[in-house]
Structure formats: C-alpha cells, structure tokens
Length: 187
Image 1 (cartoon, rainbow, N blue to C red):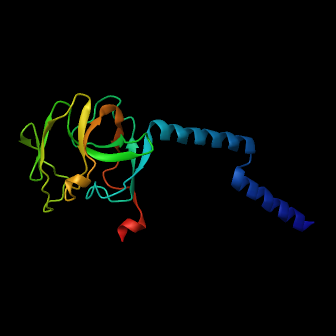
Image 2 (cartoon, rainbow, N blue to C red):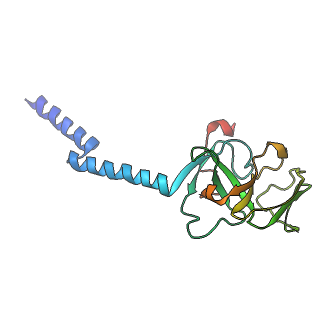
Image 3 (cartoon, rainbow, N blue to C red):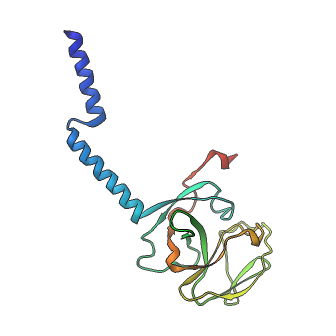
C-alpha cells in the first residue's frame, strides 16, 4: 500500500511540474503565449540570418539578429541605418546599410563614397582594407534609398546593392553586432 501512495505522489508531482495544478489554466497560458509570440514575430521583431560576407566586418556570416518592424512607423530610414529589405517576399531578406536618401546623388570614387559631391565618412568600415569601387554618379529616385553592404573589399560586381524602394524596407536591424554566430563561422 505504501508503494501505491509513493507512486501516486510521484505521478502527482510529475503532473504539477509538466502541466501545473490546473491543466485548463495551463492550456490557456500556452495559447496566450503562442499568440503573443506570433504577434511579436509578425508585427514587431523578425529574426534575420546573415548569409554571406557582404556585411563584414560589422556582421559575421551566419550571425542571427532581429529586425524591428516598428522602427519606421514614425520616421523614414536614415543614413547609416542597417535595414532589412524584402527581396523576394518576406522569406528572403537582405541586410544592407542605407547610404543615400531620396533625391541625393551617390558616387563611388576609388573606394570612397560621395553624396552630392561630399565625401561620406564611414567609421564602421575597417581601416586599411583595400577597396577600389568606382561607380558613376546616380541620383536616388523619390521613395527609394541607396543601400550597400559594408564589405567593400569584395568585387563590386558580387554585391547586391543599389536603390531599394521604401515599401520593401521592412525595418531596422536591432543589434549592432551578431546575437548568435554559428560554430561554422567561428572556425
């Protein structure tokens, strides 16, 4: 008889640990938690994985960050913001830095960026890394932003860059450095 009491006590404690004292209340909490996570994912913060070296040295390949979808509800993207751009729907996001705003003229001369013929300081780039991009001046169209990755040591032809429509910019990357980096990229 003592064994049955110990067995039922153990089962009772396992139930309390796994689903709580009141399973109906636990189910309601789980439903609210799932709904809350879905709402945050859909409307507030979207995870984004860095794939490729185009944002080096600022963001490492295979790093994971979050995009604040509410960042541009009250103001437009600003110069130097790192943004997520919906490339092919929201399942393929590009992470790029905003360099030129609508109506500005951007030009790359021997690796230096000029906005309206004035040199753009870029403190986020690692000094001493060679870059030789030369791209003819172009004026950014209304409702567009000129975006490019930070890794200008790569050949210019390998970069996805250029004018992005404002409606495709879904938010601002929340963290400056990577939140998580996979072990593959550390080796």
